[in-house]
Length: 326
Length: 307
Image (cartoon, rainbow over all chains, first blue to last red):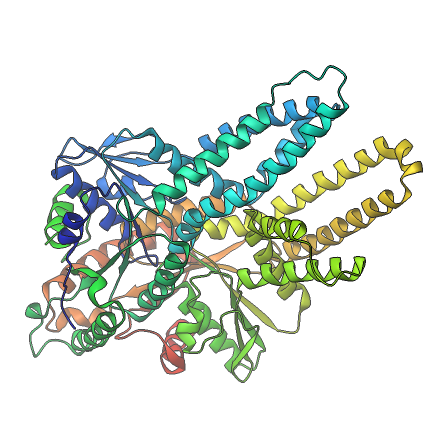
């Protein structure tokens, strides 16, 4: 097989309720450009679209030549197309505050006089904290439901897989915490003289959190709503990376939308007497394309030519739309 | 250590540097914690989760499998419980607790960190080449040493305070106090390891940190941003290496339009790089005609990097 059976456009038509799409792949393969292109396409379909970056190193502002850090702003010539680089610092501050309140409450509940500040510091300095904050940002955006369509430009794939996998992991963890909270509560009730039912905000928080995670998981694993696309170049390392990752995604039950191959040197632009360097690259490309068809087969959704210049700004993204949604 | 955005050639440069040093007769370990792990692909040998693997004389490569490390840790706990209580099997109740603990978000991070510390503290090589994960995360790992250090300080302090509160109760709970001491000792042990490894990381005499970039505007911007951040964390930056520079002789050859434009674009950004990074540029490596995989291509690249 060496041609597309289900194109990006056909995939979209076959999944008319699709609402959340993600682009992943090795660094430098054009994930941000693909995400920008898909967002513009969706806006052109008449959908209010949000393109959000959850990558700690953002590049959307650069792509659209407009500052979208910390706030969603219209980026394309279509006024339905918004982009947004999430400011993690804000979220981390906010989460810190939330945790501080909860811990303070808990300490009073447990009759401890220790100050909460130290606990809060040690909890939020936990290295996984930023990652969790990013995940919360993503789910917040999804739950707010202010747009018809969402495109997420995710951090390098490992991270994305972890972000998504985290919803599963979290529910397991929260389950455990909930259980021990319940035990503590019933013990306290047993020992208390008054027998009155005290409010338990920490418990409420955990239950709320658990519900959020369950909701996120149900959205992220619903193949009618969500699709994860992988971008690659016709080169061996990016291909190897997504081959591995696609399998991991299947394990997590995250719907894989397909593969987009980027940066193909157009043969009609290469004459027979072209420089040795170019001819060698074309030869290598042919080998890798064969590999791509063999591994991904009918999951290839688009094959995109290498443009003469860097893809940046509206004009170029518009050109890209015609190729991604050919 | 090689850092930089994804897809710029960090792993390739790590492999080439390891190759060069090994050829000089040094014992070298090149390792990666990135689950995207390209070392296997570059050396054309599956080394993921297999410990240090000999690639050629003096050259060892290793890709850390954090998941496996977490599973090993779980198994260790199970064994301890079984031994301690003389049980033949872990009760369901406790098994579910072990599962939940492994699912804790910080678990994978600390598993990775633990393994890196193990590698560095263990010794046995003349050179260690640490192929870092892409920018945002590289920073994260480097800052982790100081973060962990502070974190553990806090915990040990708290523990010590708690023990004071517990003094009275401790008289009737002798066993419990012994447990607490064991935990404190464990924490102090971890702290010592971390101090040792973060000392190595920020030691300008022993550690060099290189940034990889390519002549493109976005990449230059991101590299500048990252360099600022690294400075903030006191990580010694040793210089920059430019990758994927198109051979200038192409200008006189017959090439397609896209390549002509790329040459013009590259010239423009190479000038910018020259101005911005000046004498901190250590090497300029040309774009190769084909993928850098296998020792033959690695050797070619190493020749261009070290001359």
